[in-house]
Amino acid sequence: MKNPSLLAPYLVCFLLLTSCSDAYKFSLAHKKEVPLNYKMNVTLKEKNRKSIEKVQFFVNGKEISSNGASATIQTNSIGVGKHQISALVFYSEKTKKENSFFEVLANKAPIVYNYSIINEFPHDKKAYTQGLEYYNGFLYETTGKRGKSTLRKVDIETGKVLQKIDLDKKYFGEGMTIFNNKIYWLTWQAKKGFVYNLDTFKQEKEFAYNNSIEGWGITHNETALIKSDGSHKIWFLDPLTLKERKSIQVYTNKYAVKDLNELEMINGKIYANKYLQNAIVIIDPNTGIVEGIANLKSLKKEMEKTQKLVSQDEVLNGIAYDSKNNRIFVTGKNWGKLFEIELIKQ
Image 1 (cartoon, rainbow, N blue to C red):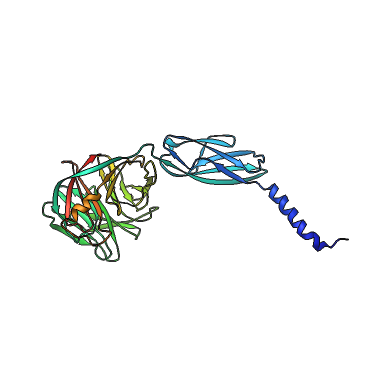
Image 2: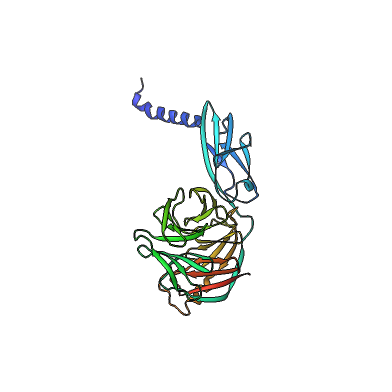
Protein backbone atom coordinates (compact mmCIF):
# COMPACT_ATOMS: atom_id res chain seq x y z
CA MET A 1 0.00 0.00 0.00
CA LYS A 2 1.28 3.45 -0.84
CA ASN A 3 2.08 5.88 1.98
CA PRO A 4 -1.11 7.94 2.68
CA SER A 5 1.06 10.95 3.52
CA LEU A 6 2.37 10.97 -0.04
CA LEU A 7 -1.18 11.11 -1.41
CA ALA A 8 -2.30 14.02 0.78
CA PRO A 9 -0.90 16.89 -1.40
CA TYR A 10 -2.54 15.42 -4.49
CA LEU A 11 -5.86 15.04 -2.68
CA VAL A 12 -5.75 18.70 -1.55
CA CYS A 13 -5.00 19.86 -5.09
CA PHE A 14 -7.83 17.74 -6.47
CA LEU A 15 -10.32 19.15 -3.95
CA LEU A 16 -9.22 22.73 -4.68
CA LEU A 17 -9.54 22.26 -8.42
CA THR A 18 -12.96 20.68 -8.01
CA SER A 19 -14.25 23.42 -5.73
CA CYS A 20 -12.85 26.15 -8.00
CA SER A 21 -14.43 24.65 -11.09
CA ASP A 22 -17.78 24.48 -9.31
CA ALA A 23 -17.64 28.10 -8.06
CA TYR A 24 -19.59 30.86 -9.76
CA LYS A 25 -17.69 34.06 -10.47
CA PHE A 26 -19.87 37.04 -11.42
CA SER A 27 -19.02 40.50 -12.72
CA LEU A 28 -20.92 43.46 -14.13
CA ALA A 29 -19.77 44.80 -17.50
CA HIS A 30 -20.59 48.48 -18.20
CA LYS A 31 -19.01 51.86 -18.83
CA LYS A 32 -17.65 53.67 -15.79
CA GLU A 33 -18.45 57.21 -17.05
CA VAL A 34 -21.22 58.30 -19.40
CA PRO A 35 -22.79 61.66 -20.34
CA LEU A 36 -26.31 62.58 -19.30
CA ASN A 37 -29.03 61.28 -21.67
CA TYR A 38 -26.82 58.32 -22.65
CA LYS A 39 -28.45 54.88 -22.71
CA MET A 40 -26.00 52.67 -20.85
CA ASN A 41 -26.01 48.90 -21.26
CA VAL A 42 -25.01 46.63 -18.39
CA THR A 43 -24.49 42.86 -18.55
CA LEU A 44 -23.98 40.29 -15.84
CA LYS A 45 -21.22 37.87 -16.78
CA GLU A 46 -20.21 34.56 -15.27
CA LYS A 47 -16.53 33.83 -15.78
CA ASN A 48 -16.95 30.12 -16.45
CA ARG A 49 -20.14 30.55 -18.52
CA LYS A 50 -22.19 28.60 -16.05
CA SER A 51 -25.96 28.67 -16.38
CA ILE A 52 -27.96 31.33 -14.53
CA GLU A 53 -31.67 31.09 -13.78
CA LYS A 54 -32.58 34.77 -13.47
CA VAL A 55 -31.13 38.24 -12.89
CA GLN A 56 -32.79 41.33 -11.42
CA PHE A 57 -31.11 44.73 -11.89
CA PHE A 58 -31.32 47.72 -9.55
CA VAL A 59 -30.05 51.31 -9.78
CA ASN A 60 -29.67 53.03 -6.41
CA GLY A 61 -31.88 50.34 -4.91
CA LYS A 62 -34.73 50.72 -7.43
CA GLU A 63 -35.43 47.83 -9.78
CA ILE A 64 -35.20 48.48 -13.53
CA SER A 65 -36.45 46.37 -16.43
CA SER A 66 -34.08 43.82 -17.90
CA ASN A 67 -33.68 41.37 -20.73
CA GLY A 68 -32.14 38.17 -19.45
CA ALA A 69 -28.68 38.97 -18.10
CA SER A 70 -28.65 42.52 -19.55
CA ALA A 71 -30.36 45.82 -18.87
CA THR A 72 -30.37 49.36 -20.26
CA ILE A 73 -30.13 52.35 -17.92
CA GLN A 74 -31.77 55.60 -19.02
CA THR A 75 -29.36 58.13 -17.48
CA ASN A 76 -31.69 61.08 -18.01
CA SER A 77 -34.03 59.56 -15.42
CA ILE A 78 -31.39 59.34 -12.67
CA GLY A 79 -29.38 62.52 -13.31
CA VAL A 80 -25.73 63.36 -12.93
CA GLY A 81 -23.65 61.84 -10.17
CA LYS A 82 -22.23 58.61 -8.87
CA HIS A 83 -24.77 55.80 -8.91
CA GLN A 84 -24.84 52.21 -7.69
CA ILE A 85 -25.92 49.38 -9.92
CA SER A 86 -26.74 45.99 -8.43
CA ALA A 87 -27.59 42.62 -9.91
CA LEU A 88 -29.42 39.99 -7.87
CA VAL A 89 -28.46 36.63 -9.40
CA PHE A 90 -30.47 33.42 -9.01
CA TYR A 91 -28.46 30.27 -9.76
CA SER A 92 -28.20 26.64 -8.62
CA GLU A 93 -30.82 27.21 -5.87
CA LYS A 94 -28.74 30.13 -4.56
CA THR A 95 -28.76 33.91 -4.80
CA LYS A 96 -25.95 36.44 -4.85
CA LYS A 97 -25.83 40.21 -5.15
CA GLU A 98 -23.19 41.83 -7.34
CA ASN A 99 -22.58 45.60 -6.95
CA SER A 100 -20.79 48.18 -9.05
CA PHE A 101 -20.76 51.95 -9.60
CA PHE A 102 -20.79 54.37 -12.51
CA GLU A 103 -20.83 58.15 -12.93
CA VAL A 104 -23.12 60.27 -15.07
CA LEU A 105 -21.49 63.51 -16.23
CA ALA A 106 -23.10 66.67 -17.58
CA ASN A 107 -23.62 66.49 -21.33
CA LYS A 108 -22.19 69.96 -22.03
CA ALA A 109 -19.34 72.11 -20.77
CA PRO A 110 -20.08 75.03 -18.42
CA ILE A 111 -20.02 78.61 -19.69
CA VAL A 112 -16.95 80.50 -18.47
CA TYR A 113 -17.43 84.00 -17.04
CA ASN A 114 -15.10 86.87 -16.35
CA TYR A 115 -16.17 89.94 -14.38
CA SER A 116 -16.06 93.70 -14.15
CA ILE A 117 -16.03 95.76 -10.94
CA ILE A 118 -19.00 98.11 -10.67
CA ASN A 119 -18.41 99.48 -7.15
CA GLU A 120 -16.18 99.03 -4.11
CA PHE A 121 -17.26 99.40 -0.48
CA PRO A 122 -15.35 99.17 2.83
CA HIS A 123 -15.43 95.84 4.65
CA ASP A 124 -14.12 94.79 8.07
CA LYS A 125 -10.64 93.29 7.66
CA LYS A 126 -11.21 91.20 10.78
CA ALA A 127 -14.34 89.56 9.37
CA TYR A 128 -13.52 85.97 8.43
CA THR A 129 -16.55 85.87 6.14
CA GLN A 130 -18.56 82.65 6.06
CA GLY A 131 -22.05 83.80 5.08
CA LEU A 132 -23.29 86.92 3.31
CA GLU A 133 -26.79 88.06 2.38
CA TYR A 134 -28.48 91.25 1.21
CA TYR A 135 -31.84 91.95 2.86
CA ASN A 136 -33.95 95.14 2.92
CA GLY A 137 -31.03 97.43 2.14
CA PHE A 138 -28.51 95.92 4.57
CA LEU A 139 -25.88 93.21 4.51
CA TYR A 140 -26.16 90.36 6.97
CA GLU A 141 -22.94 88.48 7.55
CA THR A 142 -21.59 85.58 9.59
CA THR A 143 -17.93 85.16 10.41
CA GLY A 144 -16.05 82.06 11.44
CA LYS A 145 -13.21 80.62 13.47
CA ARG A 146 -13.74 79.00 16.84
CA GLY A 147 -14.20 81.56 19.58
CA LYS A 148 -14.51 84.42 17.07
CA SER A 149 -17.70 83.59 15.17
CA THR A 150 -20.25 86.41 14.89
CA LEU A 151 -23.57 87.31 13.29
CA ARG A 152 -23.72 90.90 11.99
CA LYS A 153 -25.95 93.47 10.36
CA VAL A 154 -23.80 95.81 8.24
CA ASP A 155 -24.28 99.13 6.46
CA ILE A 156 -23.12 98.57 2.87
CA GLU A 157 -21.92 102.10 2.12
CA THR A 158 -19.74 102.49 5.21
CA GLY A 159 -19.02 98.89 6.26
CA LYS A 160 -20.13 99.83 9.77
CA VAL A 161 -21.42 96.97 11.92
CA LEU A 162 -24.86 98.04 13.15
CA GLN A 163 -25.77 94.96 15.18
CA LYS A 164 -23.74 91.95 16.30
CA ILE A 165 -23.85 88.86 18.49
CA ASP A 166 -21.16 86.28 19.26
CA LEU A 167 -21.63 82.57 18.76
CA ASP A 168 -20.83 80.30 21.70
CA LYS A 169 -17.04 79.89 21.70
CA LYS A 170 -17.23 76.12 21.37
CA TYR A 171 -18.67 76.47 17.85
CA PHE A 172 -17.09 77.38 14.51
CA GLY A 173 -19.65 79.50 12.66
CA GLU A 174 -20.33 79.01 8.96
CA GLY A 175 -22.89 80.22 6.37
CA MET A 176 -26.24 81.92 6.96
CA THR A 177 -29.42 82.84 5.14
CA ILE A 178 -32.65 84.74 5.87
CA PHE A 179 -35.95 82.98 5.20
CA ASN A 180 -39.43 84.03 6.38
CA ASN A 181 -37.91 86.67 8.68
CA LYS A 182 -35.68 84.14 10.44
CA ILE A 183 -31.89 83.85 10.28
CA TYR A 184 -30.50 80.35 9.78
CA TRP A 185 -26.86 80.00 10.81
CA LEU A 186 -24.75 76.86 10.36
CA THR A 187 -21.86 75.54 12.40
CA TRP A 188 -18.98 73.70 10.78
CA GLN A 189 -18.42 70.32 12.48
CA ALA A 190 -20.89 70.37 15.38
CA LYS A 191 -23.64 68.78 13.22
CA LYS A 192 -26.11 71.52 14.14
CA GLY A 193 -27.42 74.92 13.08
CA PHE A 194 -29.28 77.71 14.86
CA VAL A 195 -32.35 79.85 14.13
CA TYR A 196 -32.47 83.52 15.19
CA ASN A 197 -35.00 86.30 15.31
CA LEU A 198 -34.20 88.68 12.45
CA ASP A 199 -34.84 91.86 14.44
CA THR A 200 -33.37 91.02 17.85
CA PHE A 201 -30.75 88.38 16.90
CA LYS A 202 -32.14 86.28 19.75
CA GLN A 203 -31.64 82.55 19.30
CA GLU A 204 -34.97 80.74 19.04
CA LYS A 205 -34.03 77.12 18.37
CA GLU A 206 -31.44 74.76 16.95
CA PHE A 207 -31.57 71.92 14.45
CA ALA A 208 -29.47 68.85 13.76
CA TYR A 209 -27.93 67.81 10.46
CA ASN A 210 -29.09 64.42 9.26
CA ASN A 211 -27.03 62.82 6.50
CA SER A 212 -24.89 65.80 5.50
CA ILE A 213 -21.33 65.68 6.71
CA GLU A 214 -20.75 69.26 7.87
CA GLY A 215 -22.15 72.78 7.61
CA TRP A 216 -20.57 75.12 5.04
CA GLY A 217 -22.97 77.35 3.08
CA ILE A 218 -26.71 77.91 3.08
CA THR A 219 -29.27 79.74 0.93
CA HIS A 220 -32.92 79.15 0.02
CA ASN A 221 -35.55 79.17 -2.69
CA GLU A 222 -39.30 79.59 -2.17
CA THR A 223 -39.79 76.12 -0.71
CA ALA A 224 -36.55 74.90 0.87
CA LEU A 225 -33.36 75.78 2.68
CA ILE A 226 -30.39 74.75 0.54
CA LYS A 227 -27.18 73.64 2.24
CA SER A 228 -23.62 72.67 1.28
CA ASP A 229 -21.37 70.46 3.39
CA GLY A 230 -17.97 70.76 1.68
CA SER A 231 -18.54 67.73 -0.53
CA HIS A 232 -19.99 67.64 -4.07
CA LYS A 233 -23.50 67.32 -2.66
CA ILE A 234 -26.09 70.01 -1.98
CA TRP A 235 -28.91 69.29 0.49
CA PHE A 236 -32.50 70.56 0.52
CA LEU A 237 -34.09 71.05 3.95
CA ASP A 238 -37.75 71.32 4.83
CA PRO A 239 -38.14 74.89 6.20
CA LEU A 240 -40.60 73.74 8.88
CA THR A 241 -39.01 70.56 10.21
CA LEU A 242 -35.45 71.47 9.11
CA LYS A 243 -34.95 67.84 8.06
CA GLU A 244 -32.99 67.04 4.89
CA ARG A 245 -35.49 65.99 2.23
CA LYS A 246 -33.12 65.23 -0.65
CA SER A 247 -29.72 65.99 -2.13
CA ILE A 248 -28.27 66.60 -5.58
CA GLN A 249 -24.76 65.84 -6.82
CA VAL A 250 -22.86 68.65 -8.53
CA TYR A 251 -21.04 67.74 -11.77
CA THR A 252 -19.48 69.31 -14.83
CA ASN A 253 -18.99 67.37 -18.05
CA LYS A 254 -15.68 66.09 -16.65
CA TYR A 255 -15.85 65.63 -12.88
CA ALA A 256 -17.67 66.09 -9.58
CA VAL A 257 -17.27 69.56 -8.07
CA LYS A 258 -16.52 69.42 -4.35
CA ASP A 259 -15.52 72.06 -1.75
CA LEU A 260 -18.75 73.96 -2.36
CA ASN A 261 -18.84 76.70 0.24
CA GLU A 262 -20.92 79.89 0.62
CA LEU A 263 -24.17 79.79 -1.38
CA GLU A 264 -26.54 82.34 -2.90
CA MET A 265 -29.68 81.85 -4.97
CA ILE A 266 -29.64 84.21 -7.98
CA ASN A 267 -32.36 84.10 -10.65
CA GLY A 268 -33.21 80.48 -9.92
CA LYS A 269 -29.62 79.20 -9.93
CA ILE A 270 -27.32 78.32 -7.04
CA TYR A 271 -24.12 80.37 -6.98
CA ALA A 272 -21.43 78.69 -4.87
CA ASN A 273 -17.95 79.73 -3.85
CA LYS A 274 -15.44 76.96 -4.50
CA TYR A 275 -13.23 76.94 -1.44
CA LEU A 276 -9.62 78.09 -1.99
CA GLN A 277 -10.24 78.54 -5.73
CA ASN A 278 -11.41 82.21 -5.92
CA ALA A 279 -14.15 81.03 -8.24
CA ILE A 280 -17.94 80.80 -8.31
CA VAL A 281 -19.78 77.86 -9.84
CA ILE A 282 -23.33 78.34 -11.13
CA ILE A 283 -25.50 75.25 -10.51
CA ASP A 284 -28.89 74.16 -11.78
CA PRO A 285 -30.73 73.23 -8.55
CA ASN A 286 -32.91 70.70 -10.37
CA THR A 287 -30.13 68.65 -11.93
CA GLY A 288 -26.86 69.50 -10.15
CA ILE A 289 -25.27 70.39 -13.48
CA VAL A 290 -22.67 73.17 -13.36
CA GLU A 291 -23.89 75.60 -16.01
CA GLY A 292 -21.23 78.25 -15.47
CA ILE A 293 -17.90 78.97 -13.81
CA ALA A 294 -16.85 82.52 -12.91
CA ASN A 295 -13.08 82.94 -12.71
CA LEU A 296 -12.45 85.59 -10.03
CA LYS A 297 -8.79 84.83 -9.34
CA SER A 298 -7.70 88.29 -10.41
CA LEU A 299 -10.18 89.82 -7.94
CA LYS A 300 -7.99 88.58 -5.11
CA LYS A 301 -5.03 90.27 -6.81
CA GLU A 302 -7.12 93.44 -7.03
CA MET A 303 -7.71 93.15 -3.29
CA GLU A 304 -3.99 92.73 -2.65
CA LYS A 305 -3.21 96.09 -4.26
CA THR A 306 -4.38 97.78 -1.06
CA GLN A 307 -4.10 94.99 1.53
CA LYS A 308 -1.59 92.25 2.19
CA LEU A 309 -3.34 88.93 2.69
CA VAL A 310 -1.18 86.87 5.03
CA SER A 311 -2.93 83.48 5.01
CA GLN A 312 -3.70 81.01 2.22
CA ASP A 313 -7.31 80.72 3.41
CA GLU A 314 -7.98 84.45 3.01
CA VAL A 315 -9.80 83.76 -0.22
CA LEU A 316 -12.97 84.81 -1.99
CA ASN A 317 -15.95 83.78 0.13
CA GLY A 318 -19.28 85.55 0.37
CA ILE A 319 -21.95 86.18 -2.28
CA ALA A 320 -24.95 88.46 -1.76
CA TYR A 321 -27.63 89.44 -4.27
CA ASP A 322 -29.86 92.52 -4.40
CA SER A 323 -32.69 91.17 -6.56
CA LYS A 324 -34.52 94.52 -6.73
CA ASN A 325 -31.54 96.30 -8.31
CA ASN A 326 -29.85 93.24 -9.84
CA ARG A 327 -26.61 93.74 -7.92
CA ILE A 328 -24.11 90.99 -7.02
CA PHE A 329 -21.80 91.61 -4.05
CA VAL A 330 -18.76 89.50 -3.21
CA THR A 331 -16.01 89.65 -0.62
CA GLY A 332 -13.48 87.36 1.00
CA LYS A 333 -12.20 86.15 4.33
CA ASN A 334 -10.54 89.14 6.06
CA TRP A 335 -10.83 91.26 2.93
CA GLY A 336 -11.00 95.01 3.50
CA LYS A 337 -13.34 95.52 0.55
CA LEU A 338 -16.76 94.45 -0.61
CA PHE A 339 -17.09 94.42 -4.41
CA GLU A 340 -20.16 94.90 -6.54
CA ILE A 341 -19.44 92.96 -9.73
CA GLU A 342 -21.02 92.05 -13.04
CA LEU A 343 -20.37 88.64 -14.57
CA ILE A 344 -19.47 88.65 -18.27
CA LYS A 345 -19.52 85.64 -20.59
CA GLN A 346 -16.15 84.95 -22.19
